[in-house]
Image (cartoon, rainbow, N blue to C red; front, side, top):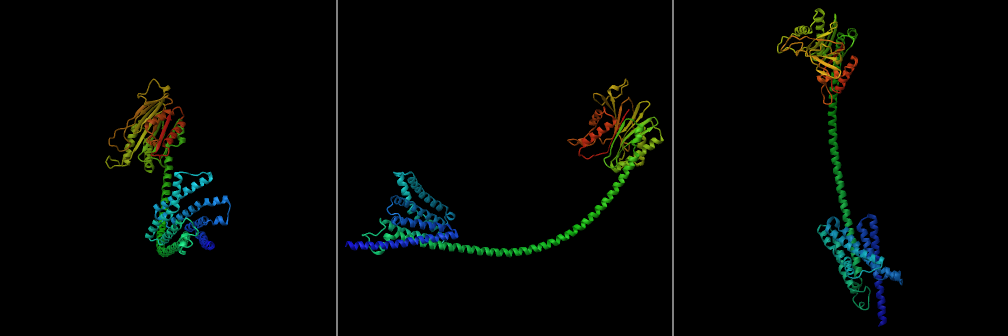
Length: 581
């Protein structure tokens, strides 16, 4: 009896080893196959499945004792290492299984809550692994309630939770129409009962008590886990293949859509190109027409420009010739140097020709100085200035008139007659503003009359005689006094309330300086605020230059004008005459 039992046990043990060897070989081949697939297509589901099969197979190989029996039999240290690796192997299998579920069911994209739940389970498994590593490295054991809690949590995390936590999301994915989820669900359902049957048996090998049971019962008791693992792997393999086909089909559909879209785009592009080509041709035709029109307009504009330039040149040449004529009738410097020893004339037309003019002439023992401002400036003013010069030459050439007021009266009569001014409301208001002064060199006195323009006399304080001027000085500084002789408030020409011009007389002393001028200087805009220079500032300027020669005074007065004007356009003609007695 004992011999029969022993032979039977040996026979059954050989059968068991043969079956388990087939299981292990199949698991190894499938692990290598999916590893090769991962290398080929880089899909994470393949590498997770390959590592899951490998870690589960090694775990079963170790727990059956084959690793110790065939490789390191009788080595105490290695036996401890092998036994210590068992929790890591089953934990690795659980982790890779959960990662496979995340990728296979696309939980990260489809169900955030279940995705986070699976990560929590992986974290619980990781806590146990960290605790085991700390125990191995620092050689201490965790006793008490904490150790029990960690072990129970870990046991649940590697056994029950991996099989059950992915069932609900698999069902949800099936309801969403994801057909490969059926294979994942069936693989889990197959594994649960077979694993349960095997785990209920405390020994994974045949015994005397089980060898008389039916063959199917023996296989289920002893090899349920292996059968479940192989069935799960086969179902997973079919599921992964189905998912790959689904992905490839989706790729094909997407490619077909892309191709169709590209065809549509080509058609649209051809249509757009044809329309664009037509528009380009139409636009080109319009541009050519516009170009021809622009060229025609350009030619016309250039012709008009050339005509305008020609007319401008003619006008400019005429004005320049008029300027030469005007300069010819003005007193020449050589003549002025003969009749005056100390003087200056600051004459600055706004345009080429000027509406201001000066008239200086020696008549017997008297010197007559005139500064006049005609209505307008430029060509109209120049015409009036020529008329004024002509009338002065005629008036003072034929008749001897000693009083300047009478000279202005006679000029007004003749100017009104020449311009046909009758005093009507529609008459032109052309006329002249003028300051005329007559110096009697022998008697050292001057006579003055003004039409809107005054005369300034500057006298050194050290030369004040007993016979002081009847007028009080208008302005003074430490060395000089400035007196003003005002002109009448009416022009030489038609006026609404005409009166005879007044002649004023004033005795002269040596080094007295006389100034007559037009309003162009004091009316010039400039300075920081672009305001008028004004009469008060002009008086102060005349006092400030009294220590200088007349030529230096002219330069200082001219510099002050240019500095004040700056970049502002000159608004009027300027004429300032200074004579020192």
